[in-house]
Amino acid sequence: MRSRKYLARLRMLSILGVFVLAMAVAGGCGSDDDGGGSGGGDSALAKGTPNEEMSQDEAVDVGLKYVGGTKGAADSAKSPIGIGLINQDTGVNAYPETTEVHKAAIKFVNEYLGGVNGHPLKLIHPQGCNASTGDAATICANELLNDDAVNVISVGWLNVGQAEFLSVVGKQKRVPVIAAGGPASIDEANLPSAYFLAGGFFSSAAITYWKDYAKVKSIAQIWPGGPGVQEFADIYATQLKAGGLDPKVVIVPPNSTDIVAPLLAAKAGDKDAIEFFAGSGAQCIAAANAVEQLRLTDKLTVGYSACFNSALKKEYPSGDIPTWTTGDVTKNLLIKDDSGQVGAMIVAMKAQAGEKWLEMLSKYYTPTYFGSVMFITKIMNEVGGDTPEYGGIVDAIKAYRGPLWTGPDKATFGTPGLPSVGTTQQIFSKHEGGGKWTYVSPFVEGPVQ
Image: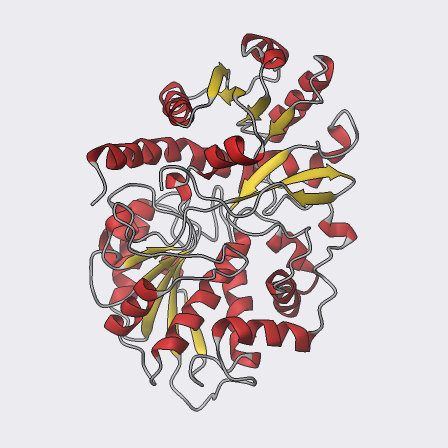
């Protein structure tokens, strides 16, 4: 059993996560002007990626190695395996790419990987599951649960409504639920039927990165202001201090582009590193200008998704995306992936989306949704049978030890305190300039583990 202190730290992380999600929405899932990319942004994808040269046959071999299927098309005469999907396709901070990525992965599995034990996958995404409110999410939850054609549920992007949706589907014991992201609360991390492929709010992997790989002891942190931000910043600072690090937190007005004074207040010149929680592209540019003005360009700097959008490239003082570091739950699309999974995903996305594959894969978190379908396929192939039953699917998930598609090699569902979470690992990479990225850590877990 984990200690009460451990569980209290998890609750602190869940509170902090609300702010982190807000940063992802503002920086990673908004307009192209302010949005960010997954796996280091799309600053070099337009020029090509080392993972783009894979052939169709090679992609199929990689896919089969992961899902354990049979080469060739699924048998259309067999009954389909239904994947119910909830996703916000329209409205403010909508993410229609998630639905398209599901379609691409399902097409790949059905046409080349033999489906699930020969049965084709079928996406079930009714209009009522284009959810942009909590009430809509509740309606969708009941609609999917009452549809006998749904064998498993996939949770897509929800700007709002995840809590309402999971409060319905996560508590029943008839249909397993797979979420590409992480739980938003300790209660969600303990739901009996929901399984998360990332730690999300509960990952403290950055602490391990700071200590063991960046080898820093002190960090200047700049946060954009807003409701509750001081509390969130204090919680994160507490986690860092518990890990033996010395953070200095400065909060700026939410739309401020004056970052010089905050960096001075954070004593950035005396710190080993800088961390920006920029809420918009404009703040990223202001941060880069301030770093250059104060001659801090030699400092290790960590930024997040808003800062790595190629649309901002020419506005940075160097005329290029900053040579900063970022963390992610999947591999960087711009770094050669020896497993071939990134390349296979690109092949599948091109087949489904044509020239739009780049736009879709460069969105924050998009590759993880492709991974959800691959994970579902793998688990159901392991269960076997014409119609995998709830109990068999859940047992297979609990027994699964990895790898995750384009993610870490290790996964462990059933960890005390976070039994529904497969991993809290992240991998960190640095933009070296000119669209070239390198890893600065492997997938790492945080000390809270």
